Length: 395
Image (cartoon, rainbow, N blue to C red; front, side, top):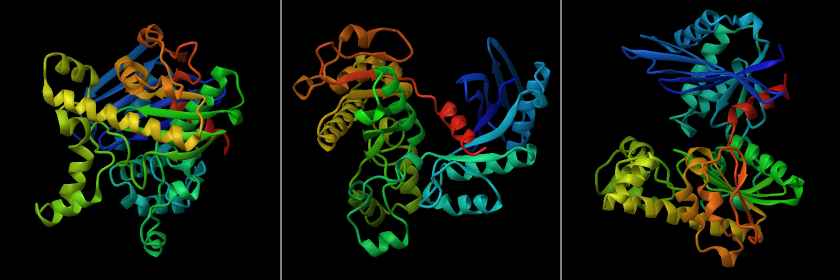
């Protein structure tokens, strides 16, 4: 069997995995362990057209990983026969120091734990997944791949906040950017789709999922991105607010009597589309709008307004834009969001083909009109493949 990489994405109560062949881009297997630590957990394994699942209590992440390998064995695929050469771990925040694919040792684990304050919802479960996987698979190299890596070398004007300089330097406060693995992969795929050198293209990439971010990329190098010091800044997201006046937070603390923890929870879990309209699934949002739900209508309008604002800003940052690409769950599948985000931008060189945009086709495709100076694409993201390929650069 060709070399494979097991890619792990660990959440607080879940473990998502894929077994990838980096050289061919093939995903041999994928699955998810849900509700870890609860009374009833579910483990699923998909291998080609086969799907296996098991219900029962999974006490912790180590049990989740071991149960996953039990399912592999039950389906006739034993761990020793899978061609594993590395385990790749998605880590959201690498801080200032960690931005290249990094082989994990005890010192790296310690550093990642110290970075928990920068991404309290994401880094701790990632570290937990790394610790568990190192115990279960001690003879394989474990490699951390960071969401912030692609944006590490943002121009200083884009990376720097206009705040007290010494304070920012002391506490490593800057725009880090996130979803970098996706933005890098999609921008490369867009260049391949257009059969053009990536160095010749100015691109805007719109990663629209439950988490959402935009980037401006010139010649393959990012020059701006919407997420900042944390993944909360920028576009309206499923449960996150995106851009908000920091004075609102001070006001809620001082006048409304909310604690820092309550404000943080509100911004991360009870804001965005959910906070405005009570729903994060855009299919349901559209249904509610059609039924006359004013809250859903407003939530959608705020979402689109912010998205259009960033597209316009990045057109200005880049000077000219060759390609705008939609990716991730909403970006790949919601034709209405794509249409409303770009409608009326023909004077700026962006014009959709309504028929192509509404097509149920999947995969990489062009959705712009033939006469549009700027090409508009839909490119499915594949962060797992990008992580697996990054692992091979250091193994």
